[in-house]
Amino acid sequence: NEYPDLVIVGAGLFGLTVAQQAVEKLGVNVRIIDVRDHIGGNAYSYMDPETGAEIHKYGAHLFHTSNKRVWDYVNRFTSFTDYVHRVYATHDGEVYPLPINLGTVNQFFRAHYTPAEAKALIEEQAGELAGTDPANLNDQGISLIGRPLYEAFIKNYTAKQWQTDPSELPASIIKRLPVRFNYNNRYFKDTWEGLPVDGYTAWFEKMIDDPRIEVSLNTDFFDESQPYNKRALLEAGVPVVYTGPVDRYFDYDLGELKWRTVDFKEVRYDEGDHFGCPVMNFSDADVPYTRAIEFKNFNPERADQQNPDKTVVWEEYSRFADRDDEPYYPINTEADKALYAQYKQKAAEEPNVVFGGRLGTYAYYDMHNVIDQALTAYEEQIEPMLKKD
Ligand code: FAD
Ligand code: NA
Image (tube, rainbow, N blue to C red; front, top):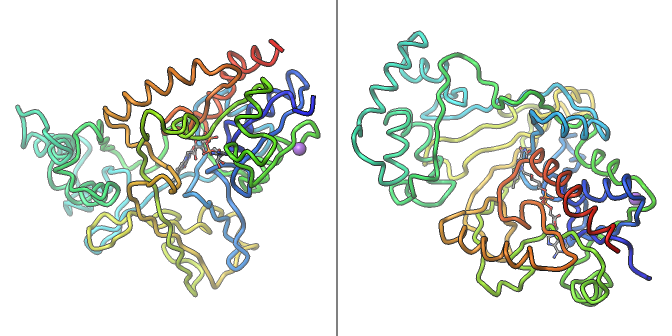
């Protein structure tokens, strides 16, 4: 048999976790293929020589979890820094802390409200549309936090994210807009968070550091000129884990699932620190991008390896994705959900193939979710598939 015991399509966190588990638990030979020229999927990063910043190529990635199984698992391959995620927003010429908290509220209203006073004020403002069902995202936002804060911090940001006026977006896009009635501006509420000490790529390489795992980059599952292609593997009955787009697998024969993508514009500054923080949101309509990432500031512990006089910033522009764009956020309209349900059925019927990851199951997942799902899929579906042969 010229084929390995298992072929994994996609070297993202789902595929890497499955490969690591299959080798550790069964000692099988695994081939991972990826159409990109690197492993790590969307969590991949690289070092920028000029500034010493670790650039997250597909957008800022912060690791956080409250799942003990996942936290123990990832710590086998990397340690994490004590980075704590915090985000700021520029609105009308001022910088505010996010998520909206008592500091944001008091700065915005030029007040010194106590938690109870702020809560009463927001409740009163949120009552503007009392008794009506929010007809669109605008009404929903006003009903959740009141018009002043909604219009300052949510409305234009959301319009830029969706390239659509919020009065034309469904209310269901925003289910909750939590306001914190204290000064805590720690972004994540999870038990553990941090960034991999030696970077994301070192972490991912460690996961597959075993001679029984081989990787083919620049290799497309649908390219029949390479040996690990869909037709050849299906004919030979080789077990496959597929983490690419589920609609692409079936040649889009039921239609296309819709995504949003993000374009990044790189800007370099001749100064050591441009924002003083890693993530600056721009809440107003006059700035065309949603937010800017200053990568150096994710890793202050590396100051002595970073250029003190230069920094690099990526501005993020959000838009609807075409078929050739990187799919980032599932749009998830009712029509998309119904279409995915049909693809899911077809995927379940596909012999010797397990679909997984964010693209294979048409969902937005954080890294810890994907690792948890991969560990479970390995136990419940992939190991049984491998033992069957
Ligand atoms: P992916 O990482 O997408 O990997 C799938 C791989 O399959 C890709 O490498 C792709 O090239 C490959 N592939 C697809 N088609 C083919 C083909 N035909 N042939 C061969 N290979 C193929 N998570 C967090 O926990 N914290 C964050 O802060 C965070 N920020 C994010 C920001 C953005 C902008 C985005 C989009 C995501 C963010 N995430 C974050 C989520 C995180 O990226 C995902 O959870 C994770 O990357 C999912 O891993 P995956 O293996 O499912 O998919
Ligand atoms: Na290897």
